[in-house]
Length: 223
Image (cartoon, rainbow, N blue to C red; front, side, top):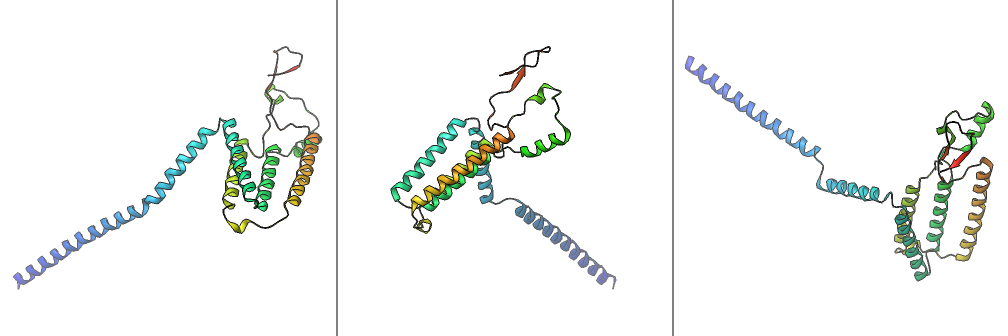
């Protein structure tokens, strides 16, 4: 009887050890599978590295404004050449022109509405600057120059791709679109110029004014 009980206990212990080993193996397998799930796939790693390289070259182009705008002009010339060659896709060209106009207006518009500053000055009264740094505030645009260029490049590329699909070639009398675009541009620019005159701002920074000395009479010199 004791021998039978001992063999039974030995079998139970063996089964418990086997169950423990299987449990540990199962835990290891689950941990490995979770690591595989957390690890990004080859495709996602490829696109992530591609996005990093793309952003790197964009950052390298940032200080070269003339080169960037030269590329933009080349894109526009290539697009117009294709439009003239195909004698179509005038709706796409019109939409691209309207988008250019909106970008240009955002480029000329200040980031903060000057009407708010004028209202605050009317409430508080005119105040003199207490520091030299307060005398000059660079023009802050609603649309920075780099984003203006980048948006124009993307829009031109999309419009160029649209010319390969006949669905976008809507028949239209193009002189009407040209006249409407010219009138819309003139009216919009007139309103923008009147806004600049009313609130006395220039959308270009020519240089930071500086004082001549500590005991200067207050004459500002452009630097």
